[in-house]
Amino acid sequence: MSDVTGRSAMFCAVLVGVLCAVSACTGASGGDRPTVAGGAASTAATGHVFPESFRKLILRTAKADGTAPAGDRFTVIEYDGGYDPELIWQAEKTGDLCVASESITAGRCRTEKQIAEKRVPGVDLFGDSGLFNRQEDPWWAVSVMASGETIDHLSCQGRNFPVRQVYSVTMGGAQRTVYTAAIPRNLQGEYRVAVQRDGQSEEERLDLGLEKGYAVHC
Image (cartoon, rainbow, N blue to C red; front, side, top):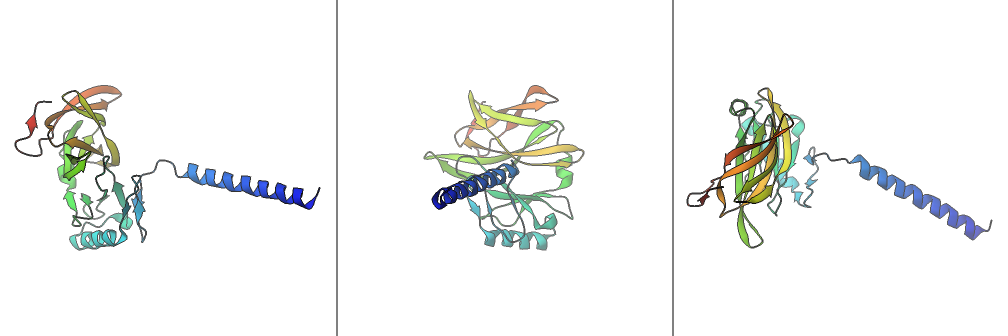
């Protein structure tokens, strides 16, 4: 075998090894939710990097309020449609479920008692994050919580709106799962919620009338 042929064979072997290693690393990532821990910023699936400076500020504020997360770890909440991500965590000392963002660094918390009192099975509004422009129209970014069941989608006036599962935790003896969704500003009211409960398809109703003057019949 000539030197050129030998070098070519060696290069191909190295290249195959590199490609296999890359493939293995990609497969190992799985479908885990992005988290923020220690001193590293997190990149959400939408490509938005949650700034490390805000993460540190949120953590300092949470520690001062007594709602610091265990191990200083947060989970990234993502929204479809362009709304910026937030951080969610369960407070180590109080058990509260808290959410914060770049614009609201003091966590908005639901106490463990408040969540435990939610109807099981059932769905509730977990939080309204704010308005944002989507395709030049204003939309609401909202988060909803399902207790003891899972949500397939929201619907109103024949339109289906997808949900994104972002967080799940057992509280008050039931699985509490947080979803995010985006709804048009001009389509607020009592939404139909398609859920799965004990393997069966069911329907819930959820009031998403976030502003006065925008109520519609869904």
